[in-house]
Amino acid sequence: MKRPMIARNAALFAVLLLCLCAQAQQKLSGQRAYTFTKQFVEGSGPRWLGSPGHTKAENILRKHFAPEKAKGHFGEDAFTVNTSLGTFVMRNFIAKYPGKKDGIIVIATHYETNIWLRDTGFVGANDGGATTGLLMELGTYLRTHPPQGYSIWLLFDDGEESMQRQWNDNEALYGTRHAAARWSADGTLNKIKAFIVTDMIGDKDLNLNLDDNSTPWLRDILRQAAKNTGHSGSVFKRPIAVVDDHIPFKERGVPVLDMIDLDYGQPSFSHPEGWHHTPQDTMDKVSAHSLQISADLLLETIHLIDKR
Image 1: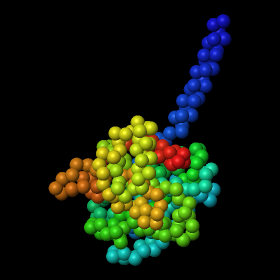
Image 2 (image 1 turned 90 degrees about the vertical axis):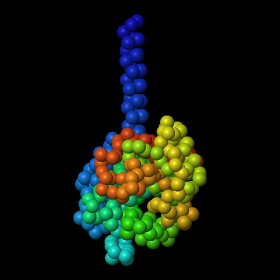
Image 3 (image 1 turned 135 degrees about the vertical axis):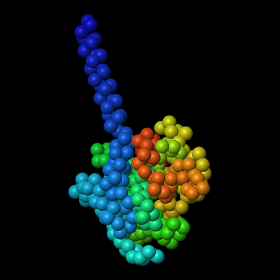
Image 4 (image 1 turned 45 degrees about the vertical axis):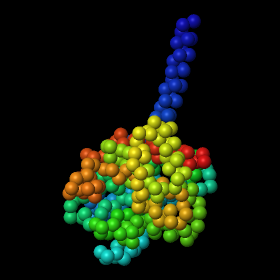
């Protein structure tokens, strides 16, 4: 009698182990996102427009999304802009993962660094680097876990940063302004159910801002996602109206959400924004744990939008 019971227990244990492994595989990995971030930041370095690092950053994205390109699901959109610093060719990258519902959720990050910080060695580990790594991990995840709801498009947009130290709305957000205009012209805009920006969400002291420029129902979904994942302590500590890559889409009536933490490092007299836009924005300030929280929130937010 004992041996069959042992066999049954062993079988049950094996099934439980398989279930646990399946659950583990269904999570985005903050550690892998950190590894991708490190590879991206160290492999490109400063990546301001027109720099060798910018070309390296583009090539890293091309290499990472080669499987998507082979399926016809990865594209580049090059465009030329005239700025106060001259004429630049910018380039957006889009990875597409077809879903089962009619509609698209766009997840975006910028990948370049500030041109006005070009002489400082600024590598933007958290500002552009961390979210590029996070979306590289999301793309890796979606290869084996295709969307069961809306299609998911990953947008790596160029030219988010202002051309000058003093922010100028007319000389920033180039990539998303271009994408919004193009997708408005070809009808894609009408299919976008949510446009989500990820920005500066890899720092160790993570708390996503309550952005007044985000669509209220999407803010509510993020709040619920935080509750569902046990991360309520990592969101909405400080309300603020953020001007970021979601604005061009908000202006065209698309529901938008900015997942951002602008409170980065201790402010000082010389650096009132902490490490933001300083050479101190380096990999030692980025946390795999924070990227795990951001990954959990992002995946649950997508899930809740699908259910809406």
